[in-house]
Length: 299
Picture 1 (tube, rainbow, N blue to C red):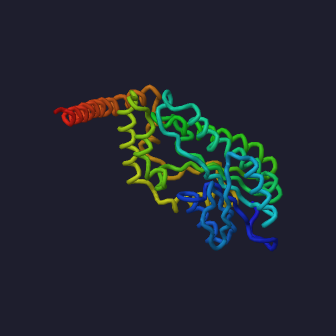
Picture 2: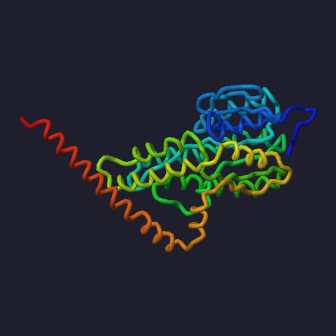
Picture 3: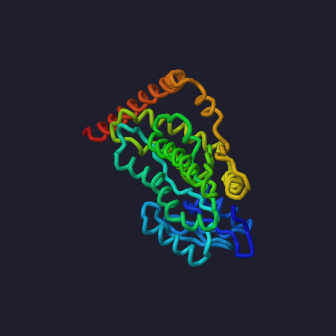
């Protein structure tokens, strides 16, 4: 791993640096003497040691332009950190396939494109790749989270294969697997679940229940600065681990160690009654709304 030398300050490119976990990581690297190229769909705020860049990870030309800028401005790239990503919430049987494709295009192919665009720079500096996965990546997928889980499972496979290729070139590849952290995405989780189903959807009650549960997790979510420290370690320590699991949800971790049929049965027992109750409640709400509307039109 290249460190600060007489040839210049070490440089890191961080995608998804416009907010949440990416912004916290960018601030930490800059505070500790690195020059940060903070990239997002809209250019993030700059600052001391931070150069903002507007980049679309679904656009190869945009990423190649970023690589050219890093090469021209700094002549080196010591680390690449790939935070850019979007959530994929909703029932898979009902979600528009184009939406699933969008999640995969940003989360998976966006990562692939970014590494590809930066590879020559990384190789020249013996740099390091830090891929942002999730606790969802190695775990069995849960209801209403299929598209996102698909993308993070793919990142796990991509990271393993990439590591076993680049290690022969002297480059490290590290996977970060965050649990729940306080970000803009988690703060809007209830609304996202509510908007994930179609009118009259048979999954509406499930979405409501899962949304409430996910929103409750935000109350116990960790500070983004904790994850930033883990990413700092992954990006700078001399001998990084292959993976860093950071603040995983204990319940999910325990469930994932049980046989799949046992977990399916547990989910049925834990969620079945709540979903049925919520479905009945929604029917009553719909009936009350209809009755109120009828009353308004009566002479």
